[in-house]
Length: 499
Ligand SMILES: Cc1cc2nc3c(=O)[nH]c(=O)nc-3n(C[C@H](O)[C@H](O)[C@H](O)COP(=O)(O)OP(=O)(O)OC[C@H]3O[C@@H](n4cnc5c(N)ncnc54)[C@H](O)[C@@H]3O)c2cc1C
Image (cartoon, rainbow, N blue to C red; front, side, top):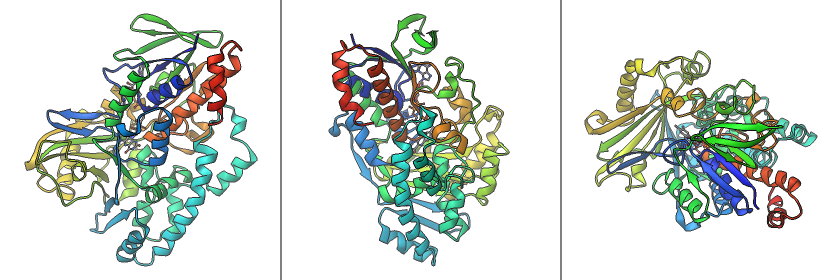
């Protein structure tokens, strides 16, 4: 009899863990509290229109592709395009800086917009290349369920090499002289809800990776992967129960024996938690205090027309980025002059709206937490709309056919810890060994995957956390399985070699 592993949550982490475990002969079932799978990876849809609700920037394409392959997702079921222009950053003083995949083009852009910074960029790319390899093999692909696996001499040398004790913002200052470039090479910590001035330097690898590995786009939108994954689950015979919240768990002698779903008791041999981890702390006897990542105010628009004079991804910096970050992360108040990000996928994908029309998405970093009642902040929303129209999309109010807004209050209601968009904050003491691990508590057969779990947030990284969780389960069950459990044991050697 193969072992029954229940997965609480059909986010990207839960679905990938399920596929990896099924491949090894486990009997897997997924319980999802919402009416559909995908979690943060989903669409805002109106008749004839769709736009990604959360993730839009596809990073680490090789990691994404290789884990989907490994999980058994057919290669021809999805398509990824690389962007030549990664994005533009529009400063309030009128300066515009564009980032490109092509290094020569980038150097040309630097010599035009920031003459004298070219050597710093070359040095940045060279040094980060070596750091990326160290970061990937020593931290991204390793689990630290046993703390001693982290505190090794080799890892300490790697951490010093990666200058983990420095902040991402500080690192950008080693290579770039102009404050605007320093912002351009550190604002990426916001992709995972972290403060550029406190997120440790290993996150400097994100802006490096954008240039080195590119920014991609999944045809049909990032969330079109959800249908691809649910089709694959069905094909592999993995049941996915929607509208099925895991409400409670029954523990005996340090193990989970069963879960409660819609009043039913379901016996399990193991449980993988894919909901935002801190929200399950009470069920899993975890007493740590976590700090949430930042939140977002999100605007989604249906537009009569297409903004052709734009890039797919654009950043619009406020007058004082440091002040904005202080308001988000320290003072935790509604920002006065925030920077924002705009996504215009119609430039590369005309399937998202009726002919001649398009959809847009704008994200404004704001504090997480329920202390701000966003329904009382209409003044801020109106001001932002004017700002978006003035700086990003002229004539927006006339072309707008519909608009939806989401705030951290909505995110919290959906089950994200304190309304933080990206899991717990990527601070030094919530990264690496300090972040919840694939086996996050003393409960012997409870595992976790997701943005609040090591190695952290972002679709490919969460997929990596799913891989770490699956590998840990395979390892643990190999140790506990009887020799009669031939089916499982036979497959173990193969999978452990991928650890
Ligand atoms: C606005 C926004 C923008 C983003 N932009 C990017 C980007 O550009 N690029 C990128 O790579 N990433 C981005 N991300 C991050 C990315 O979306 C997440 O890291 C990733 O989707 C998290 O996946 P997950 O598996 O951790 O969990 P989730 O997507 O949160 O899924 C968890 C699932 O568990 C379910 N659940 C919770 N509790 C229970 C329970 N008790 N029982 C049953 N089910 C339960 C939830 O309903 C949910 O479906 C963005 C996120 C947001 C919010």
